[in-house]
Image (cartoon, rainbow, N blue to C red; front, side):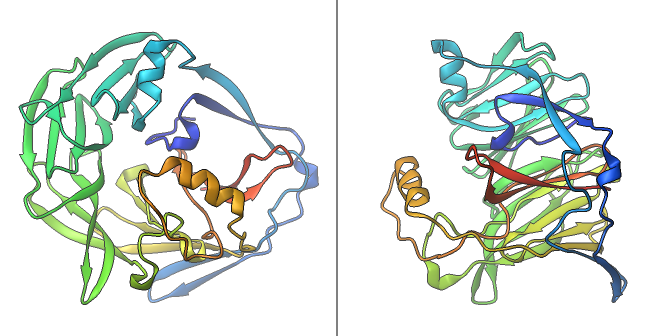
Length: 320
């Protein structure tokens, strides 16, 4: 089971999902499926289908440690992706470069540097790997392409678009999140471009509360490209995820009932340590969820803000 576009929760360890033989504890799914204007609405209850231990995670590979070389790679890790051979591509902000490891965790190459020239980055934000092409999105309104060996191919100016993250589909089309406006309201938009950054269309828009300032706990949308170039877009404020086909048609919405988790003083103190600026905390509760992952079988792994007794975040798991 291969995960693409790993989130920060999966930085240091690659996991293999194992399905345990305890299905007898299945309680039955108690949600509903309905149709609304041609969109399938899947409403999930708070309680999962299975009680007891059904899924376990087995550690398969660990990269990184306390030595100086790995510290400079992982200290300010921005984004990572995995190709079809299991090679791991890590984008580091500290080094403004890409570090490549094979599927055994052995270091292969490093490419890219900080700068404004060809093959250089100013403010890199995300990496995406498809076929023999590696794409780096830069907030300095530039997208750069490299081959698997780290050789610079070309770059495009994103002109009026300041992309917050970007990803490639199987055909080389580019999807990106852009901070913009919907009328008079600030919003984050999911946009699609062709291989030469020609605008194709807008898939979705997520309105940002204008009265909350730059609260670091503000709900923020993300997206993943899944099977057959299906795009999953998150709306974390009410725990919903939207499924779009490659033409931008919304065909499925997945919802889940949840118990809001209050933002604690400890949460705020930890956030202050991570920020380089003063922050105003306007939100009282966390959103419905944080990050999510789509695997190559269509399963969803959604990070909630509930915690285990050991203090780790609990993930909700959805089948295809």
